[in-house]
Image 1 (cartoon, rainbow, N blue to C red):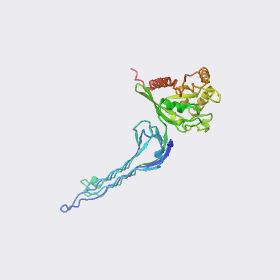
Image 2 (cartoon, helix red, strand yellow):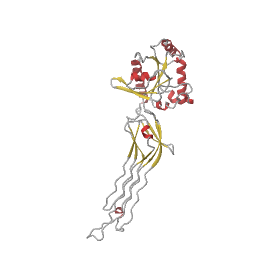
Image 3 (spheres, one colour):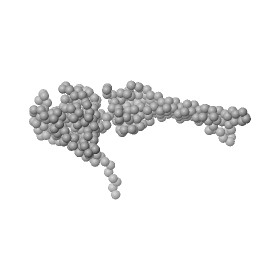
Image 4 (spheres, one colour):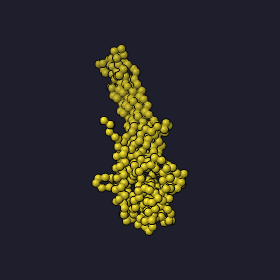
Length: 341
């Protein structure tokens, strides 16, 4: 599936129907009163999140959305039917902005969220509403009002607990496939991950967390090199980062330098992203030379390093357990505090 994480669309809510002026015309009632019905309300344009969607591809296949107009009123106090709403399904994590004002209308971060982005016009009143003691034969009625219209910008930021970052071929995709049910593309050449991939990790005892795998980063990504940093928006919402570092690179490069390069790219993109809690997963520990790479990382980086092998499964259970611990710690640190007595 082609991954689309931004879209521009035009939405138009339905116009309200007109009320009418009419009077009773019955055989033995020569002076029948007003009986004009009201116009129906116009339909709304509504966005709704759908967990089955992971891209805005379906949205951009249609760039204009129109809700139904309300019907006009009718004689005998019959109201016009309301116009039909239009419901646009979007992935969880979609941010909705008014393109003309730049105003954020809704951040749709949860399943089943809805947002009315264009409200339908109100139906006009029929002349039955204007009868009074001084106006027994009202001929006035109201026109329906116009529905709202907007140009919208939609931006998708995937919602995940954990973000996997690393250089191309560091082993992120293989790791994701081993700790979750995700099936990312895996191959022995760089940039096999061309779009973010999501997986759900079952940590046991009814505990789960979601992981987002990002395309590989290289030096200069913030300037557009490689795949650039175009997908890093999708880990801005994560609470924990796992830096996957190849402990035994085939070109005998220094894993410590690879880690620092990654950190610099994250800092250039967003200091707040770089400040998130992190773990270092030293991958490919089943290969020759990995022990030396892990030792250098531990000595020179000064952060927690967990050796793993996605091929043999070694260290994966510890990585999942430690990740869950940090997630629980971040939940506690961000939980609202009670009012002091």
